Image 1 (tube, one colour):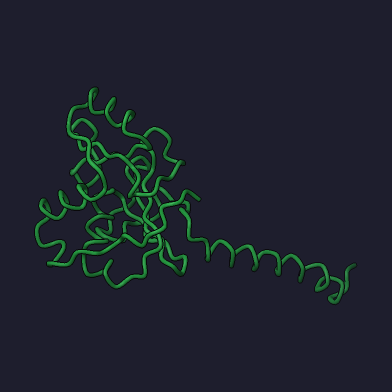
Image 2 (tube, helix red, strand yellow):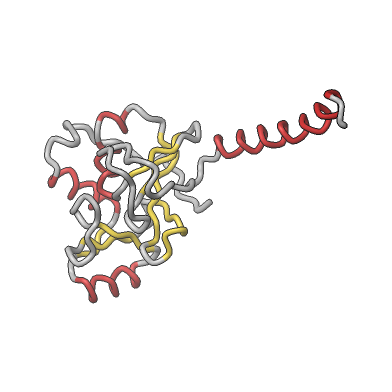
Length: 176
């Protein structure tokens, strides 16, 4: 039978390693896992259900804000809630490989009714222009960049920006 002191000696290193690992994950400012079907959108409060359309914002402190659609992140960043944050980076999933996160500013977007997103502005993201153009050829719509996504969301969801435009030129766009 193990004594309590022996149990403490064996348990302490495991707890210490787990604590350090948790701290590293909490401070990670790169894209983080979104728990599909378990995590709600930080903008509209709907359950995040489709990994192809999800998006995320990471603060300088490593906190994740998750969204069920690219347009929700754009509205959040442009609105008063986003304006209060110290934003480190914005991430969108490659539509064909949702585990591959792309910096929002470097992604190419297709806005098409043929690819229905949860919030119905129907943005999907791609790593390069040629892939976006081939999606456009197949599903119709238009190919846009991040600043155009923001403008379309602002115009479509009038009142979402409250006259506030969030400068994100300082955001780290390196892939992590």
